[in-house]
Length: 493
Image (cartoon, rainbow, N blue to C red):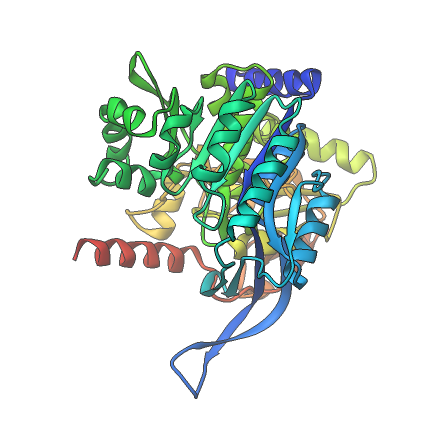
């Protein structure tokens, strides 16, 4: 067992043992995701026409922090303000279903519940439409302060989520000063207003940290060095005892008074085309770990692992303890060599299971990949994904690929719930591996036909089946990489 796996298991066990009570005080948001395929451009305007296939409504903002804290094992009470509109009713219902106590969630007659609607066409967000709540009145602020005081009774931790939509230092800070629990964490767009609270931990992202410092953090891995060098300033401006600065795909940096080096965490590579709310998950996980008595380093490592889970999912997602443990344990248990694969497939056949096999580079995993893999899994009982090694990717795709190493690509695939086994092969085709393990079904995307594949003859020769699953348009890795590079060029122009 690796140290990281042991740490995550220890934190989960500590949470289960302590059963901490966490109060989330913040700005609730209803996140709506309208998902479809962008098949053409409208004649009325230069905008894509999205054929809607699915609409999802989930807790966002502070409400997302609350459901993540509950999913990770804490008892959670939520304090905030919503309207008595349809969005407010949906949001309260979603929180109730998640097991969050909404007794102190205030519903204001005639008010609007903040809603953020993202329209997704293909593998990108086409537009986001925000409906923002009006600023609360003095009377509503007083009600919020009273609700906060009542909710804090017996709490182990308080999380303040300030998105500038109603929850303010003027309302909440005096209450927390008077009834302060053991742990106070603040996640705010502007942390300066919370300085006098002297939080135990703040969790600004890169943009928020740059705004606090009044300077750019640089690009890529350089940002971590810039954050570490600015440790004293970050802690001084925020008044915090510790700060965990999140740097999306570059992980996070923990800054603690008296430690000039900082402590890094590393993020697992993932496509973030439709991910949202990973910062909420990070804040929730760190807070729950601190509430259970963990130190700051363990809490931040736990938080990074939880954030890694949700960025692999589309939309606003929640990480629970089962998904977290599966994620950190999966690479060691799911990524196998060819001997282990042959043994596992042999055992599956003895048990009468149907083995499905597919292969590819899977360089930057996106929604096209996950849709394709879910379809493949539905064809049998055990899904095996064979991954081209780095040298074979370079031969197939060119010298600038792969973007991610085989180890990272295998780890991401292994964390997907639909994937049972991952193996890496060095040849240009998986024919030698297919001939050895002889899966029942060989799957490729529908942009091929069986006659185009050299593998077809091998599979059919031993009695296997070749299946083409639906092709998902607009989701190629090459397209994702091209857009990333175009964006990078645009930022430097």
